[in-house]
Image (tube, rainbow, N blue to C red; front, side, top):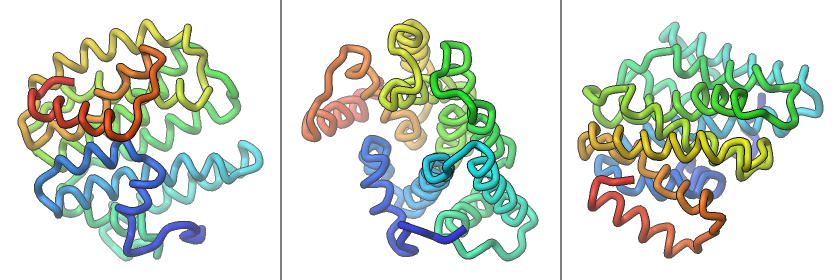
Length: 235
């Protein structure tokens, strides 16, 4: 699979364009090396999403996702990794932080499970959110603080995943507003169990409250909201 739009030297710039909320949250990571590893994780997440958007049917989408599963094989075999900027950066992050394979695999499996579904119901949406964004939040926290309790990030990942589905029109808002509201409440409690270092892994979830309220704040308001959340430790 060609690198496509990826600039090998600018994964950060890519995430700034395609995932601006989590990119903003990543600015609160004070360690540049850890920030780059979290960005690599988000680039992997983006590439899985792009694999689906670039495919004309579910079979081709599954083939593209299988390419990434094979990339994980290479990463965890600790040998050469295919020449794709996101794959190579992810491999470095996995090695530096001894990240587990299971949540990275779940990010693929969660997408394969809904390949043939244009619109998800509430249960399907929750499962997708847990597998994809729940796994991403867990891994981001592990990069930032190896002692961070994985279960403390799960509700924030679920809330963020439901928000993304809502924004993308993959689920009816009325179907997921209740589980999203509950996930946000649990995410606030979970965030209190995270240290300062791990907090940026769940910080973007703060912005889901605007989606629930039917509001679309501008960049300055979003940034200010994250500043307040970071200062108070509350999402």
